[in-house]
Structures are given as C-alpha cells and as structure tokens.
Amino acid sequence: MKRAVRTSVRLRATAMLVGLVCVGLPVAVPQGRTAKSSLLTALEQELARSMEAFGRLDPPLYFVQYTITEQHRVEVVGSNAALLSSQENRARWLEARLRVGSYEFDNTRKVGDRDPGMFQSPGTQIPIEDDLGVIRRAIWLETDRQYRSAAQAFLKLQTDREVKVEGATSEAPDFSREEPHQAYLPTGEIQLDRRPWEEKVRRYTAAFRTSAAILNCIVTFSAQATNQFLVNSEGTRVQFGNIRYRLELFTQSKAPDGMDINRYFNFDWTDPREAPSDTVVLERVQKMIREAEALVAAPLVEPFAGPALLTGRAAAVFFHEVFGHRVEGHRQKDITEGQTFTGKVGEPIMPEFISVYDDPTLARLHDTVLLGHYPYDDEGVPSQRVALVENGVLRNFLLSRSPLPGFPRSNGHGRRQLGYAPLSRQGNLIVESRRQVSPTELRRLFLEEVRRQGKPFGLWIDDIAGGFTFTGRGLPQAFQVIPLIVYRVYADGRPDELVRGVDIVGTPLVSLTKILATDNQPEVFNGYCGAESGSVPVAAVAPALLISELEVQKKETSSDKPPILPPPHHDPLVAGGKR
Image 1 (tube, rainbow, N blue to C red):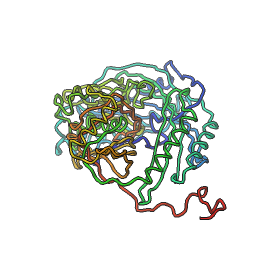
Image 2 (image 1 turned 60 degrees about the horizontal axis):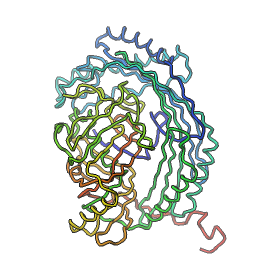
Image 3 (image 1 turned 90 degrees about the horizontal axis):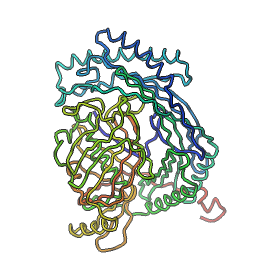
Image 4 (image 1 turned 90 degrees about the vertical axis):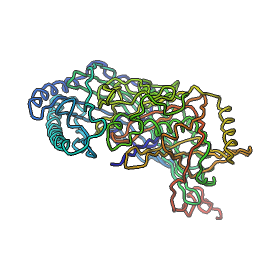
C-alpha cells in the first residue's frame, strides 16, 4: 500500500473537514452551549442499549464510541475582481466506532498487508435539528450497520491470523485502556454577514490584475464553527468547539519555458477582532505580485548538493516531513511501514542541541494562532505535550489508543478527518535549539560553510509550499519539500540571486544529522496534513536551520507555453493602441 503523506498550506477543504479554518468578521462572536448538550443525552441512551444487546452476541461488542460533529461554515471565493461563490451551510455527522473481541485482539488489527479500514464506513449525516427521537433512530441504524461490518472483519482476522505474519509489534494490544473523562466545554457559534467579505474578495482579486504576470488569482475567505460531542462505553463524556477563520491568497503564473509559478499566502485567526486589515492584505498582494514577476524571469537552478539555509517556515516543514511522520505511533506497529525510528528510543538521532516536542494544548505562539490546537483528540483523550526528542535523543512517539510495547497508553494524538478512523497524528510540532545565534550570524556561518566546502554558492530557502514523505517499506524512505522562494547566495559576495525550479529531497536518518546551528527567531507554519486518517490541521514551529548538506532536484515542469496573448486589460490593441 502506498504510504505517502502530504502537508500543504493550500489543501482544499471538503464540506465535512473537521477543524477547517477560515476567516472572520469585525464583531464579537457569542459563545455557544456551556452546559451538557441534549445531544450527549441521546448518545448516552443509545450507548446503553447497544452495549446491553451487542455485548451478548458472538463475537461480543466490548467498546463503543459515538461522536456527533456539527459544523457551520461560511465561504466566499473570488477570482479576478468577481465572485465565484458565496455560500453558507450547516451539517451534522454521526460516527459509530465499534470494537468486537477484546482490548488485546479486535476487529481493527492489521495482519500482513490487509487494511482493516476497508470494513469501516464513514458514518452518516444526521438532522441539524435537535429532534432527539430522529437522532436516536439514526444512531440505532448506524450501530447495527457498524456491528455487522466489525463482526465480519473480526472473523476474517481470526482466519488470517493463522496464516499471515503480523509484525514485530503484534504482541501489543489492539486498544489501550484509558481513564474516562468528562468535560462540557463551550461550543462555538458564528454570526456572519457575507456581504462585507464579498466586497473584500472582489477588491483583493482586482489588485492582482495590475500585473500581466498573474494569469489567475483566487482569494478564499472562510469561517467555520466546529462542535464535537463524544461518548464512549468507558464513561467518557466530552463536548467542545472551536471557531477558526482563514483568508487564502493564491496566484498562478507561467515562465517562458512553461514552468508553472504558483504563489500562496494565508492568514489564520480565531478572534474576529484579529482579522487582517485591508492595508495588510493589499501589502501582501503587492509582495506576491513582485515575487511572481521575479520568479517568471528567474533562471533555473541545476541539481545541487551543498550548504543550505532554511528560514523558519521552511525549517518547520522540513521537521514535519523528515521527522514528525516517522514518530507517529501506528507506523511503529505496521509491518508494511519503514519503521525508521521504531528501535531507536534512547538513541541519538539528531544533533545534541536539538529538542522536539508536540504540544496540541498550545493555542498560540505569541500572537500567532497554531492550527494544531485541540482540547481532546478524536478518541476522547485529553491533548498532551509529548517530549519526542531531548538533546538529540529519541524519547517517545505520538500515540493514539493503539498501544506499542513499552508505550501502553495514548498521549492524546488520535486524530482524523470526518469519515476516517483516528490514527496517531501530529498537532503542534515544535523544535527548540540550544545552539542559537542571531540571523546575521547564522548567515555569516552559512557563507563560511559554503567557502569551507569550496562551493561557489549555497541555497537560501526562504518560503515553502509544503511537502510529502514516503514511509512504507515498498518505497524509498525519502522526503520531498517544495520551496517557493529560493536564492543562490554566492561565496564571492555577489548579490543573492533568485532562482526557480528545485525541490528539496533526501532521506531522514542522514538529513537530520546535518544540522549545524539555528537562529533565535522561531517561525510558524500552519497547514493541513493529509495521511491515512484524512486531512487534519497542523502547525510546525522551528528556528532557521543551517544545514551542511542538502540536496535539491529539478522540479516537475509543464511543456505548455504561456498564453499567446496578454490578458485583455494588459493588451495595447484592446485599449486602442498598437501591438
């Protein structure tokens, strides 16, 4: 099975994407329910009936989790000074997670290359009205359907277990025993007039039209309130919500040789009073235009291996791809995975001045929103700070309720997009360094390393789009990070030169040992990460990195040339002049 996981600031949201963020309004947002919701009561009532009835069957039901997720989403999308869409919708989604067998061996176990997820369905849509009778009926039907699928999977697994190898960690139980939690946190509500944002989207996209280099532009504003209500047969009862806002700016250009030049920027916030002003957004628009025009004219860079300087956002994505995915717990017990770090707990895996932790309890870093924040994960376990690397030594993994030998409990990292089963995933991955220097000094050390290696230049990676990594055994254990802004920094003192056409590539065990120093100004990368449990919001935080050797390869390109004619409003003939 393919094991490629991708992180991007541009990942588009589906209608049912949990935690989808987008942007706000200049008025206060009222808080929703703080008392226990009647939805929890309906879930509890059906939970008691289900455990009583299905627990007596063969195979027996031993665990049930019901989750209702309700979402209210507002979205305005425009292009080239006109609206493409403006819409608002509400939806509720019910998921029933049933486990048959026992904590030690149940219907979710992966044996060989067989994926038990093939027997799991994505749940069902339920009414947005609080008609508890109708909602209980939907829970009843979904429970019956899920039990039949779970029982079928369990019986098949019992047969497969006799003839297939399970893997080195098959002695670990399939499900962890956790303490029940009860929390009735505030839920979120949004009240938003779309008309002011429709005008803003028109204005922002019109500003991009001033440049002939911009072939197309799309601006998306969205606001989403997501509330979750979860009960399970162990006694957990939680409700919580969040409101997130996002403004996305995206442009498309094309170089003379056919290479696509895309630029992207996003604003994220959770307090509507923090929405970016028109001045701030239009300044960013002009910066994106200047960058696009420069990139269209920039020379291509050839494949290169040598010193590199990654600014904070680029460094954050680097750690997310190179390290973060490989310490997700489920990858340590899957025989089809590369298991890069499975046997390395207690061993140094990166320079001793680097420490890494994941902390989804953090909602902000200073004034910057962190998208990987959540109070409870999608298995009802409180989010926790997890020290993954201390002074270069691997200490822990990100864990859902799928335990590992020596790691019997979840640490609150079971996450999923609606319609997928929760797996261990990153939240807010944060890199700290004890070898910090100022940005000016880091650049001096960078040039010193370029000269020491006898290279004519090094590469300065200043902005990043995202990346992906392969973690399965059947594929190379490699990663790829996709830069947006790259400069050649010359050893002889010539001015930095903007270049295009490269992707960062490498293998994790080697790349992590090449870090020489960092600066003292960490930056935040907010985006959406796609993997086996769907797309989830994440953040990564890191200082700029000086790396002694980084490899870049040629970027995939297109053979299509730029349009034959200029845009109509940049065509002298259309304007009455002469071409």
